[in-house]
Image 1 (cartoon, rainbow, N blue to C red):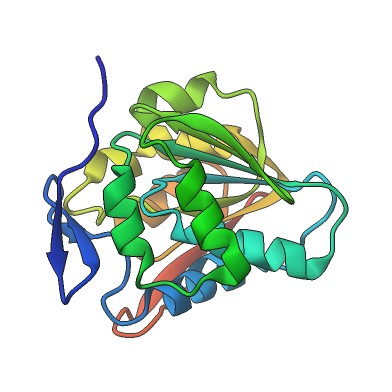
Image 2: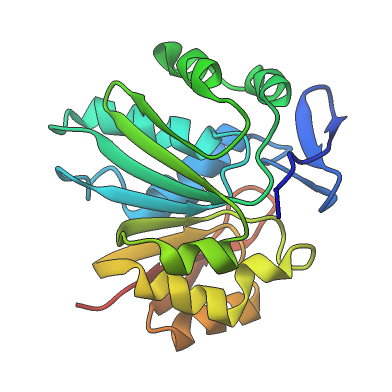
Length: 224
């Protein structure tokens, strides 16, 4: 079935909220700071960056996570591009992404480069220091077919209470099967069933301090 772009409403000016899931795409407090805390620090990045590093993500959204890790990758001076694969069922329309991006810094022009390349559908986007593939469709069907293995996962679906399909034990098992030895995963949620799903899939899981009003988040590591 052809997937559709998500329907967006706007809160506090330019914070996009998914009408489908009634959940904002990024923190109402500070989306950039939350991404840095949860997904960079939660995966021990940029310290773990190495040539050929592969990041995978559930939920592309506005592309904020991509911009943050791409900026960190170039600042680290690693040879070759960062490999970034994101699984997204309902891609954001280009006009909505442009509006959402007004809440972000320019990232030395990376924000505008991503917006110019984004067509609102799954695609491969190649930009300086980056090879990004957005795979459109339900991750429960698209992830099993992926041939890659991630060194770090950004688990960034909408709230488990509102989007439970993206946090199911079966999908966490697929995440584990597509994780490299000693690979990591991080997410803003500390929901018990999410942590149990990751643990049952083979990750060593810990609950740590969350960002802002979220008291806890989850970090996970795949043993050797």
